[in-house]
Length: 228
Image 1: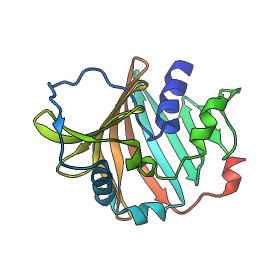
Image 2: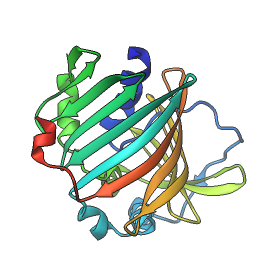
Image 3: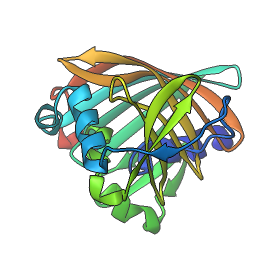
């Protein structure tokens, strides 16, 4: 279980922007050309497509229920976030695995074995937000290129953290690719007028998995006591 849970969810939960994992070669040939858009315009369009930056920033807490399918198994996961704090509980065959960050420190607990979150991850975790999309800052990107994947155009931002593909038509994030792994947002769901990834195909550490979001609760049901 350690090889399945920890590497993947570290990449998903603890990267900035979140879900920035690596992917192998694209299924279709891509050719990058310079875009007339600026990084700020791409990210502003992304926030607008999600429902508006002001509305995203008004979210103080989230509860997200996911089903993760990997290696023929289904893992149920519930993640609570409050500010930069989070607690993820993953359940498989009656066993629970916990990842927790209280704003200053945290740990992984897998079937009674606790491992402290490495010190070099703490600074990034302190920047965390209840909504992962808000981690995007146009100042981290110098330019925009346009690439075609499977016949569709995507505006691409690249930094030392990876490449991020935004649908030129909808403005939504479609794919991320970085050294840790890759993720493709296959669909989005609407919650209180905002868009969130609903079906994600991911690959990292040689493992392929599917993450389906079944429920998201905003600004309710989370307190500081959840992160003790």
